[in-house]
Image (cartoon, rainbow, N blue to C red; front, side, top):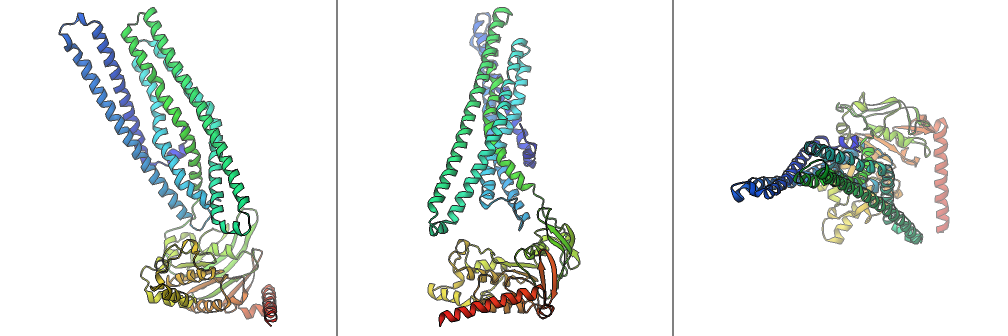
Length: 589
């Protein structure tokens, strides 16, 4: 009933479970002491005439009862505080671990989890585990101890009653186990439906514009209704299961207590047990079952928490990309005889060998699916090769400190993220000491200065204070891409990787940007991935790939002279562009 893997996530916070259970046991003793004091006082009242001293004889039972009440109250308050502390610390630590894990995975995928799934795991999933840790686990250990403690107390009074009560107690865990297999399936489906509904809702909100354009919003609305109805049905199954389980546990608990009471009455009539001792057993009988009854109620919460916990474990148990502690001393990168496969069946890279010098422009080209982006992923450590090695300055990439390597690396792609901040704040993320003059210079290099100056004139304030909205919705796709490029330029890194960095940019801006990239390559290592081969013509070295293999390498002129795959692809692309340009001119005439 306790998942060791989930318990291991608590780390040093396990101590709070020990303290909580210890205080709960102390409270149990206090409760028994209060019951014993009441029975003692009743016994004194029955035999009042036999004692001298009058009402003074009730002083000690009263004192014991008051002490018991004080201890019970104090332990209850402290247990509540400890559970709250345990829950808060567990949530804080788990959220930190999930966040750090996502950071460690970095550019890698997170086991197919969507953004909605990650959000739900880090928020709602951790919230469910809060109850699992703060309520379920302490109650589990207390429920296992309490019946044996009470048995040790009552067995000396009337062993037959004590044995009957103890034998009835396991019926509650048996009923829980009987329900647990069904409950696990239900809660697994419940969490799956919950995350599925979150994914569907997020997709619908993010794609609302497209749904309206394609007049598919009604169909998506119906799909959302179906998803919601599925979630409602599974929720009702959970509630029915909980109600049935609670009813069974109540029958067992109160039936067992009733049996113990009946045995106590029989002990008075047949076995010579005193009525006061029988009263004590009757009052204590319910305490045999209440801890396990409370545990049974927490069990349903635990199942939901355990289902969420498995999602968190799945994320946390993903292998981290291997990094070392060495620092980068030279920025020449070599990919030496690298083979890589995503699924272990089909190689997407086959014995690829490339060199990227610390100065100069090196380009990787080829048709879609040839392995260009996979090589880039190898360069910034997203994946490790099945065979072969990637080195930086002669050192294996996995032996380097990730912080040291990334301090030398900048990656600009077609989907580089722009934050919901001002233009200036986005630049300061890349270089906290950047000046306005440096920002303007970078914007001019990407042909974006006039746009910023224009917003400056329109708003009457500095264009650098223009706020970029979420997902850069208030600027065009091309402007977003150029802004991302400018931000990376002020980072002043030693290695720049441009992965389709000009895919959404007009021809005029593209020419300006490529000229600046070429100028950058005179001092830095520049790697360019581009489908448009006209952009790679100035490259110092071009690698041409087909189906995961390096087929040709050399300058543009050398590759054209060979008349191989690169030359054919370049010629075909150039003819298509010229044909398109000619057709546009004819239409204008």
